[in-house]
Length: 373
Length: 164
Image 1 (cartoon, rainbow over the protein chains, first blue to last red):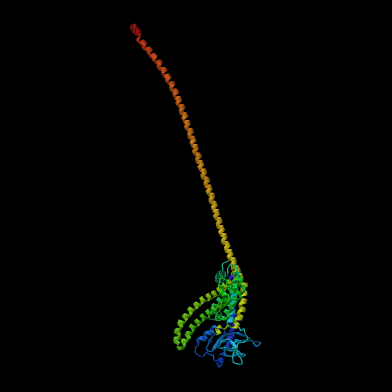
Image 2: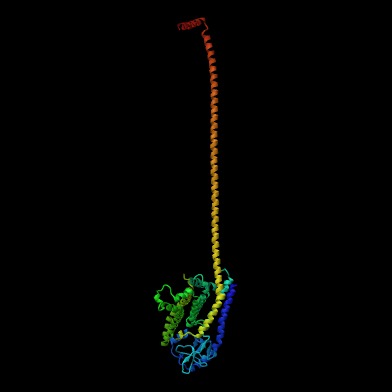
């Protein structure tokens, strides 16, 4: 019975992957024609023929994009096109990213900015030649698709685990269930219970488990360099910002009287720190916002830094390869060795960062709900 | 700069998708998983407690058994001791009785022997006396057969008397 359900789950996962591939392949072929045409379209930032730019390559890999670039063979970019959804001047504008020809062409006035604050984002030029963002940009970008993929994966995995709990009630865990149970129990006992306390932890447990596994899944998927994994989701400041904002909102809404009183009037602090200049309240109020801010930056910086280092090692091969092919080959041995080492380190960091983010969130919830005597 | 400029699309889709997933997982995954975990932990704990209770009950039973056995042993020992005492008492009594009986018998025997002995002595005395008289008679007859001797003896006797 459990074997059958395992097969069923595998079928669901397999089906999901197959659907992604089927949807993308026809378009991949359709792209071939554009390769040469794009060449004619000379763009200032077109570096495909120019010398290897390590910095640009790295930034391109770790930032969001309107299409999912998989590989470039010769002049043919193999990408997964993604829908661009813009709202500007009262009109919705929806088109596939193929219309942008890998950032070399403009579509209806919108093109991908190559420098400045909005680099990598769709902009249009106003009358003065300034780059302007559309009013709303809700495109399904690379990271958004990766988020959808990882969240779908999570739902499939954990709903199936929940099912196996129901099926094997009172029995020892098996398969995926026994792989994830220690982690779930760890989050419950060592993060939630330890930080929030026996009485109130249950209310926060669903959120803590969800962020823990969301960060963990995306950290791990980020290490895998193949579509549909490989997007830098947890190294995207928008994603980590949303996670931190969730923590902030939950903390603020569950803050009890004592928690807010601590911010307004910190007990056990000399009075001259509060009157006439409310130094402590200002510091506490800032702390309210620095906590989620630090959460956001820590996760973003850790994961991005890991990816940058790995990509840096890979870049070394091409930098030396441009000097001489033999040198590039020689360096590749060292580079690959370091990359493997970094991958193992990233594997460790994937768990550590998921743990740290969840633990700190739990600690903030614990602080907000702590009973003072 | 693009690295720290969050895309609005990412933020809005992330918020939406994450919120929905949080809701779905909370309802269909975390809730049943937590309930099952709790149930299993409770069942394990209750089983452990039951085993502990059973062990305690067994121990109590064993203790009871031991006590019973000890009591039985004590009773047996007491019975044996008493029996031994009674036995000794009986033996003692029997010995005493036998002794007195024997003493009595010996006493009686002695008395009878004394009696018999006395009777025998009296008879022997009588016999000896009669035999002595008979012998004396015979001797006297022999002695006093001729006249002369008779007269001399009588004379002698007379002399003795007159002298006195």
